Image (cartoon, rainbow, N blue to C red; front, top):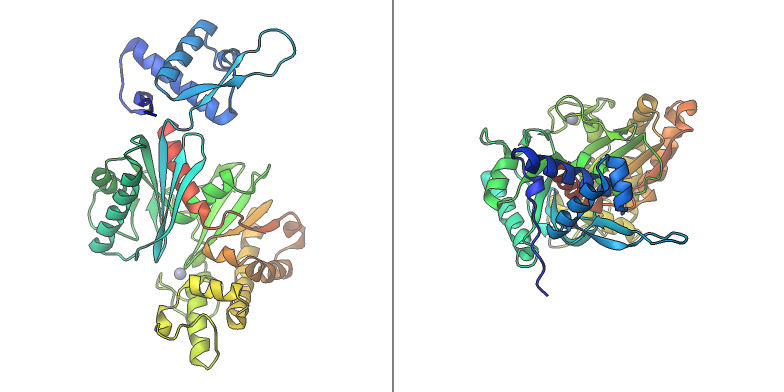
Length: 408
Ligand SMILES: [Zn+2]
């Protein structure tokens, strides 16, 4: 079956004249309303958006010709003629999420109706601050997008999640690939041919978790990204908090330990030096060198090349050293969480990221330290959960961010 090509003119940033511009504006308002409220009737749209019924009917017909919306059955009602329901056409357009990790990339494709319809996990890649690494990244994005191009010509945006300092408004990355003035998002958009939006990885994961995860009615939520580094996403009153330039959430670098470990930020005593994937790897290597044994070590692999995934897999297979070290990391994390709980008084605190796949091995020690160190009046309000989405939150967040940028 040959699919009708969609018309995405309304999402483009150009100014048309008179009636054309006004109609584009109204069509966007209809799309946004359907996105926020789900399927509805022409009567409801007309009332809520203050557009006359004939005008709404005309715009709906045009949006159906553009293949952006479709009929979604009839409204259930008692007696009388049942009205048609309209909603977003899921297969009209798509968004790609690119979640860059230290040793691999996770890719995802989301349809217009926010369903993740494809995932390609753990594509080998090494995140290094070199031109070669950037070239490889662009190559892998192109490969992924090309897989869909024959059928899915209509990818409208790419959401790219990267660790470090990111200005999500300008698309600039300051920690990686900052070789020239041109924003990273533009460099990639030019090479791939699809608008690209850059976001800090922890905040993108928080986005996925907040809008597609375990939240019910919570509006004050803290999301912890436990990967090699330690990141944070903050939701206050239902809105993601960015700070002035989008650099909020540097949880890993709050100085709360008296140790001699130099953090990769150059300072000593950062939370990340004791409670992160980097700390876990360091402690693991130290213990093996002191004579401990673990099923995570491989005979033909140098000790220094051990990865988080190796340790997580070993813990899942009851490896004592891995479990012990995860508990130690959890306890140290608990100190950081106590600080957050005292400051934010959140309803929900979600431990996510790669290390969250170890579940209670980290969460329970963290919880008991939180009980010990934070004010009980404050921490009684807070539920501490492990993410159900796990790493998937990253690609979902990336897709959602691209989708929001295009639609809103
Ligand atoms: Zn630091």
